[in-house]
Length: 628
Image (cartoon, rainbow, N blue to C red; front, side, top):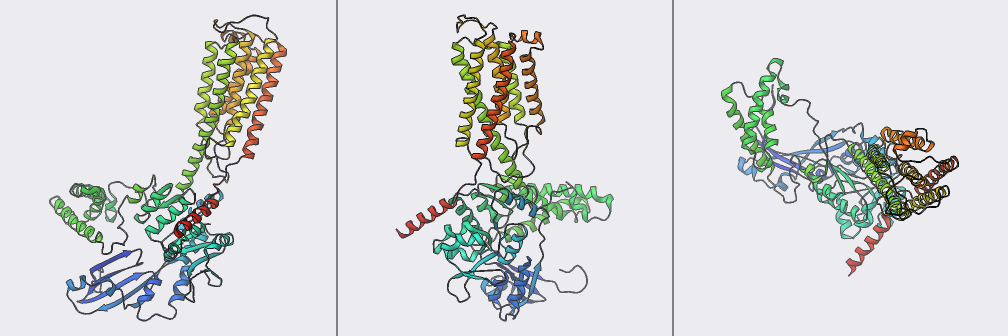
């Protein structure tokens, strides 16, 4: 309805809602007692429903789609005289056929400023990027090239021009390659592939889904069930998937993905209760209108609280009622009128004339299907999830290694050495425990780096890297511990120490305690996982200070600078020769453990899971089942 001036009122009599498999929608309208059908949809769909196709029709819409624009074809036709009830009962196919072309609606949808940078970072961190969209293939390929998903020459799968089979076609239609499912893997090495939703039926009929889909970079014009098929195929061939989606059409695929991220298109509100007062010209009336809107929304929310949709309907009531409440005695009337309009609108939207039609978008559907929900429509939260996930994984691995080495060393001290009469005093054990607790506390304070690395962490604890690291470091620790105790025994008079006797200070106990402190510091320092996933030791200030405090404490008690401190710890003075040997051996032990750990990290880097072999096996098994 035009606000002012001339123009005829357009009354919508019947809606035929958009369906993803039809790629179009239509309305039957009445203009001054005459009935018309207005239709809009994908250009390739509307083309076959026109009575007269302009000569430049295909060339024009492809020109704009190659530029990344979204193009809708608009068409109409005049309907014969009839009653309103007859107009509402018209068959959809009748309404959407025999149309007159009206023009193209071309939408320029700029890419979000951060999308290219985020996707480039993901691609540089050993991840493969795939676009799944409902847009036309040419539009999708253009957008994918701008955000680094497509970096090689693109090929789009479509019906062959001679009507026999399918072929790969470049966006400029200068390159054509006959489609063969056996050559898809080799073709993906030199080109980035794109397929449309209309090709899925052919792939399923020829059992080529597992041979083609894993190598495709762009999926265009796909239906909701096809999105789900794409995700299940990726999982079948052994690929880990993270998917972002923002609507009900993505729910099935979000559930199938290993990690689902729901994106909210709405901008976070900057105002809470008075958003409806923006239309007001007088600032002094904003607060009053805000209160009235709140009352109306509460009334509407209580009436529509059944079915879990009260909150969304309450919001709509708030916005609509704010312009219709001029007196206090009209609050309930305005709310009731709005409730009736909302009920009629929702009933109309929820009518499904076709069982294959996509469900109407409801607030929260994508969020309920995903473990993560982003407050904005940006894909940047994906990098946060991966950074935090990698940080958690490497922290878990280093904790297992540190606990393993500490437990092995402690087990040896409490078993074998205890039989030889080697013990630790109460105060000694307390101080050792305090340092251990501080190390474990501060080591978990390491934050992930702001940028993703191309390196990958090891995916599990039981791998060659972890086992060899534990065994190698424990062997070095054990050799250092035994050698130090044996060296200390040379400076002690021969005496028989009972295992069950009380603790009393002697040179062996002192050396054993000092060596255990050295091993403790070396274990945490060597096995700390810093770059390229977490902060390094110098960047993790609390952990650095704890290490320096432990080294300083060891230096003080070894050099016997504070005799009173050593007496309180029940530590006896060390001979100068033995003290020098301990310091040199400790340095050699640390360098040996550090070199062994770095060597293993280079020899056993984190790898991308090998999925191509699994893909070939799955495709072969599927082919065998079909033959049987």
